Length: 151
Image (tube, rainbow, N blue to C red; front, side, top):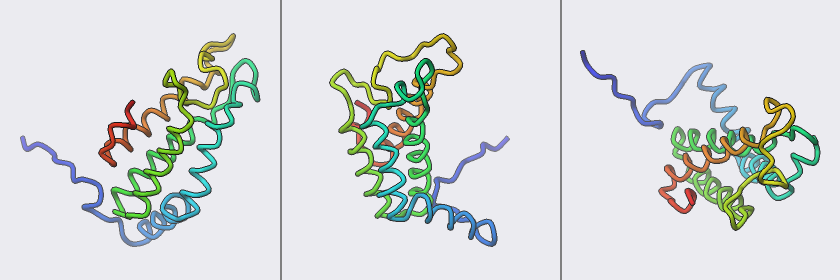
């Protein structure tokens, strides 16, 4: 049996009605200057403010997941479009995020990094937020060939 080989992103492009919709979304939310300078920058701001555990005592909020989800989308979009401005935007947003890192390595939207348990563990979002943040950093490190993002 032949082995299935996946093509790297960017080797195929979606056309027609679906391609138009895809390009519209990519431009509006990710590739555009607004995508990087407003949407992604707003996600980084949650890491500077660190209020998720204070805004929702006992369980916390989930603002931290948005940076990672945006980054995963941005990395995929950059591989698909090969847009050099987006590549630089990704690098910039990663640097902005790293500037929020504590000396012990914590990067998050909770004031108290140890906030990972509560009376209702299913409602605690800090671990979920960390997962998306780290996943986004791993994908960005691969795209940018920047191991500094893994530290």
